[in-house]
Length: 324
Length: 262
Image 1 (cartoon, rainbow over the protein chains, first blue to last red):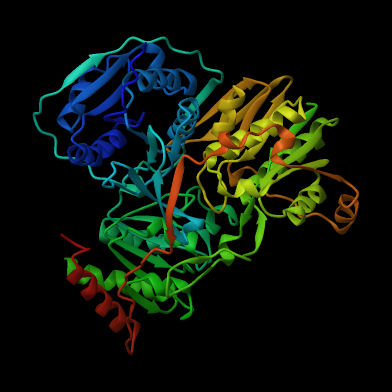
Image 2: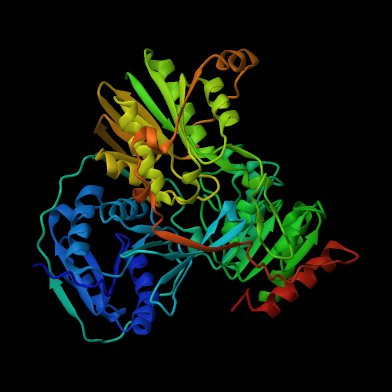
């Protein structure tokens, strides 16, 4: 007779280390509430130090799979190890970082485990029946769906910057080195190259000055850059400037970068729902648009009805004066 | 390349969604539907491959509880050769695991293929799980977030867009590829194409036709609510006689908010 144990514990994994730390922040709170163990999984080659640090950030246990085959992300090797761990340790909650690689990984893990999966959770909580409840943006930013699980393990994916890292502290925990059979990849990576973008990442900016279709020429981005410089911020744009006009390579919005700066200045941005979904978490939103009916004013804290070509330089001068 | 199966979802056109301001509920009943954007890119890519290589059959595959004929006709007009439509009221309650299982069963029934193409995520639910789940059920190589695709003999080569890098990957076919919107600009079918499409075949299946057992598609999740988010913003329009005056007021407001300077 085999003993089938109950699912218990929370397990966290992302190939992006910072995202693992962020997930641990929220997972620690949930583990305390459920009075259960919090484990993190660390892959890599010589990853002992990283594994130890995960304990400082809230993990009770770290499954360390130190193997050169896991040094870089490849779906089948990663999937096979996570699947093996999930079968052996039977966590009730599995959190996977929602990166471009992590989401397919989570979906396939869920399929292998015959489990449900709720992707891109921006909020996570547990109800009185220990059920995990995830909240995610859906319908192109028109709605937030609240979803609960009907079976275990409960698998969620979590995007970057949804949760805060805990302050690291000396805590007791255990690093368990695990040796498992690793599947071979079915896809060969021929080449990897960094994207040709500025070294600054717009997701990390505290201030963002962005533009939409109101920008008449590509070079006029200088106008935004000058204001951003005064504010110690960065510039961004909405999708039409990338997809239609091909002026820039990255955009802010639901399908692009989701940002949460202290200040977001949208100039010449109409404010379609997909763009708004990407800036929802900004602390203060300023809208500048010629059209007083532009929907962006509905979701802004401060609005100026006017030509961005006049407003931006004037705002720059005014701020310069005050900030000196 | 003998055959490409393109998975097409009929999605709610999110740009035309209405919201009941009193309840914050979405009014999805009767909302306009269309081919989910990313899936349309997948279809376009399939047609491009066919144009380049020749001798390729393109089948579309759609699962829906409601009628989707209009959407399927559009796909046929764009250039698909045949549309498979799994149409069953029981589909309404399925989650991504159920949808993937139904697709897998339909793919098995269709038989041989070299490539399955689909969008990275759907326009309305935007889960982005079904392609991966289908891959896993079929035990195939997978390429997601693909923004460039080429075929070299029996090998598929793709460029994937990741967060801060891109990678070129290759795999032996058959394989599953899901694409982003950057990959191409879907064509708009001509009147001639639309006329021709009316003669193309739409094969309709119920779940029993593809051997789907109801207990296999029980949802593993439960949607508790779907509500328009509360956006509580100040909505203050700053006015003044001159642009300088407006800028001055705005600068002061931002300083007071503590979002500029130190």
